Image 1: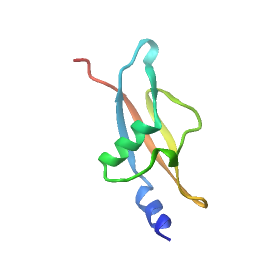
Image 2: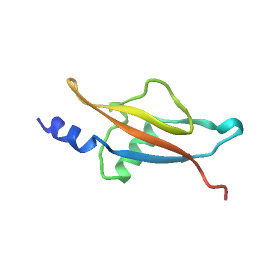
Image 3: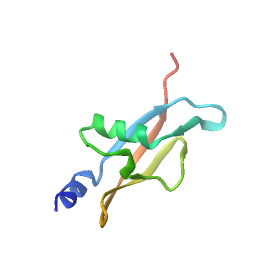
Image 4: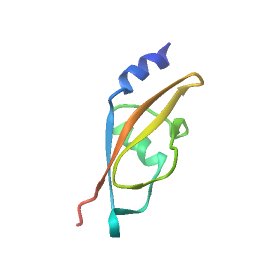
Length: 88
């Protein structure tokens, strides 16, 4: 029941992660589930990185759908927006 309430809170949530970008807008490395979990925590959502499911590693800029498994029968999808980090 608590997982269903959490799904309602996660629907429509979007987090933004800034990454260094190389040629052709390819990321240096990829966005990891740990980075996504940290970004979610910054927004007030406690999500364990083991609950996050990526179809494939995120290696490009733009929006990507990420699934979070809150319970064996309950999951939610939210968006991760990957943007270019500002050069220092």
